[in-house]
Image (cartoon, rainbow, N blue to C red; front, side):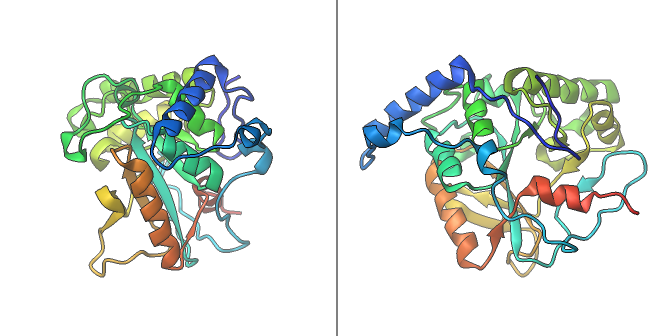
Length: 289
């Protein structure tokens, strides 16, 4: 069954499938090979509750906390931050090249809320990632099975196009093919149809929003800061500080497990919570009474 989740309860498939199970075993083997890793056979045999049984990870909005994002005509809104004064930020990650099993383990075991915007060519390792990210160890490993593991860890899987083009250079029909094709593929491979879209490079125009609407996408999600190698935050504001409601952009890059740990620790040391983006967007996009 394929389900949507914006404005309702998002349901994932109960089973991960044969491919995801095989990938999980491969990830466990890889973990055992890494220095300093350890696992208890008895512990691994104990059944663990699923993300659905535990409920959504991360901070959820309090009553009256979130400001309303007004509608922008009939087209999906473009959102770069959440209107809240609470010290909460939101983590998102793009593409899908570096399929590091340690990252999935962190997200699952620590119940870290993060939203993934996946791109077909990255997930399927068609071509090569940007060399600026460094030499990766897990490029394309697991492919869609890895994405299903993220889904099972409670990560919403959203739309980032098939081929990562600059959408401003494409006409409406070509943009629609990129967006709708990605949504269909994710629904087929993951079992949940996306409702959010992140335009590559942050580039979009009116045709992009029209195409997003035609493909059943409810919002274009941008960001307020990016995360660089080493877990360093590159801000887009003069004071170089986190602000309530910030949306942070990461990429599936080499050393993801290490950099993600550094980033999460840094955010918490600064007194911020990690928010559940889905819950906050629902509050921010609520209809006026």
